[in-house]
Length: 185
Image (tube, rainbow, N blue to C red; front, side, top):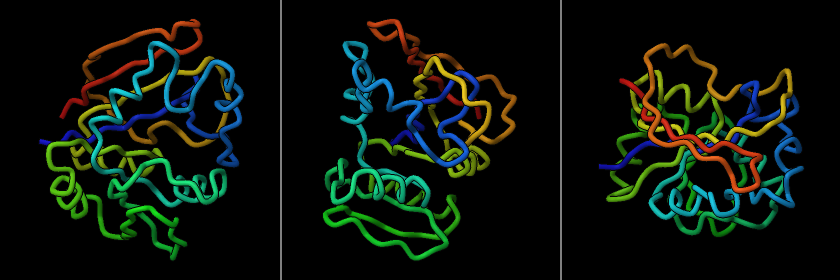
């Protein structure tokens, strides 16, 4: 059965983007940080190899359009974009735009994933909706050694049930911590 996973990078103070939805705090690590993972401790390659379906909110989708115009890095994987607005499609992307509740769409995503997993790309509010309905299985978190003081929260929800740490590893250069948690239901 497909796992629904949130793979994300966050600041030490729990933000995934600054108040202007900017990621320069993360992209500043370009010499030692590949946005797809970090060096020898790169969890992304193993993660993405098992992903069959993606889901993202409209802000994340528009950020990709703005910062990587004309490029789609996710191949032909079905990608569900949750939005209440009309968005321009990215050429070559297998997109499903939806305003349906996550509970309804999750069933279709699970079926489309087959033996693979579902990646909740972001943002935190969308992922929070999956958490609200007990549809989130794991959080894969890369913790970056910076603070923003404000911005888009990692997960803007109260979740007090303990999660189980499945793994924790430092990047080879000692900059990042990569953690994987099983979400308690």
